[in-house]
Length: 254
DNA sequence: ATGGCGCGCGCAGCGCGA
Image 1 (spheres, chains in turn red, orange):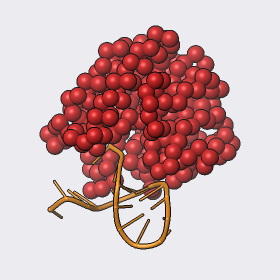
Image 2 (cartoon, chains in turn blue, red):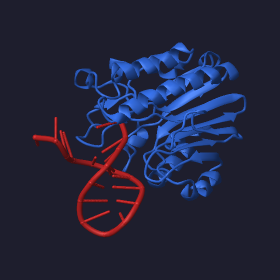
Image 3 (spheres, helix red, strand yellow):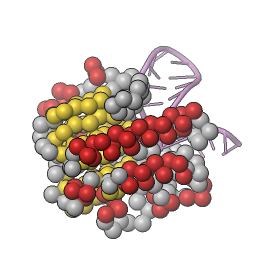
Image 4 (cartoon, chains in turn green, purple):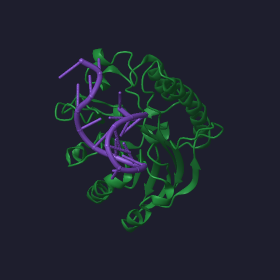
């Protein structure tokens, strides 16, 4: 199974990129974030015509998640159970015997913002839920835009980003707490190029200069980590006209 | 110099992202 996560920054604008990319890569499951579209306006027909089942949970202007799968989608869950949240950031499904959780973790804005505290609370609730999901599903995949660069090697300029949002120690501690549950960062199961990132600012020619962060992740339970054959960032869509500011991250699991 | 770019919304220019 080829499984991907991609923050598309508007499903409407990026639909041609997404459909081309699915056709070229033959991806089996892709989890999207920042679809920024109410469910009534989601481009379901175009995606189904490409051979995918699709589920989505969206809202106007902000947030929004979707999961596309070539195999049937079952047991859809929207949001973190027991965590009241107006923002559409979480979608979980089962495909075959694999549980797949798609996350758009809050950005946090800055470490002194109310939004940062919301992010930390959100991550606390996520960890408790993931502990329960791991107990129920030996084959668990947790993917998405985590809005956390786990280590300094995931940051183009660690000094400039030190203690800033996306890189702060409390955020990184929450990321490590997920790993401590028994999840593996699929990207770090393999040798990777130096300076591998998944997001680059639209400004300052940041992509051309590779001024990025690795904030989009694929976490795998032990049973799936053992079957994981590769995990890569696909920079190709970031080079297109009107790209998302994020690149897809892709894992192949036997 | 605290902007820069690109999105949605909606028709001007603002909030937000990361």
